[in-house]
Length: 162
Image (cartoon, rainbow, N blue to C red; front, side, top):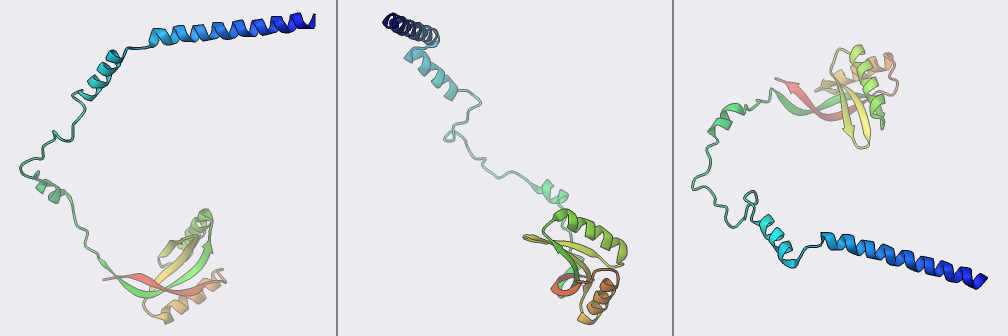
């Protein structure tokens, strides 16, 4: 009895395998193309008018006229000069959102410009533009009085308005 069931299972597996292969062959046979039709499809794709052959492209005899572009492009004159100066750093963090929050608070408290500088991986909040260190030291003491106990002076390139 065991040999009969094993033989029956083996025959069933063989039958299913053969029938699956024949269906695959029929589907593949219905969709297959001859070598001539395949070559025709490839040839027609390469000869479509939307395809450009780089060898057939010709450069214009004269370059295009782009004078109209000069009129639309405006050169912004730099109204500030970059010099070495001082700022007061009041905060540093790797979290951008904390830095933005502190920057907004500092902008409300100080009457001088507040900058958010990113020096990987830190976001630094710096205040003021000073040419001399004495004025920067005065603002540092003000920052400490306003609740920024770790405020310190940094030497950096600043913008001086002309």
